[in-house]
Image (cartoon, rainbow, N blue to C red; front, side, top):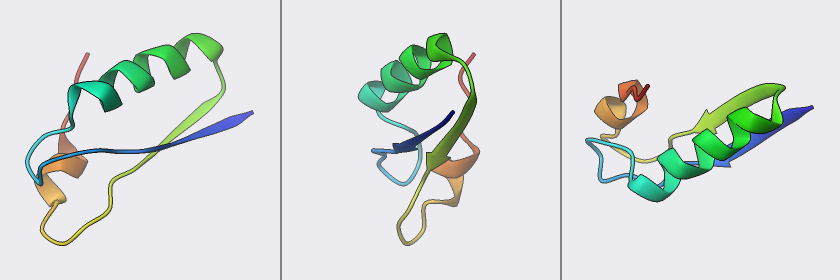
Length: 50
């Protein structure tokens, strides 16, 4: 099962709500897709959190 998450960000980093959603989705397993959309949001798209 694929899970799509639409990211909330400030064009630099992903917001805490998005990171929490990613953590919860990881527990479900399957493919995880995070959509980072917007003008000038390249840095947010590269944001990594472990």
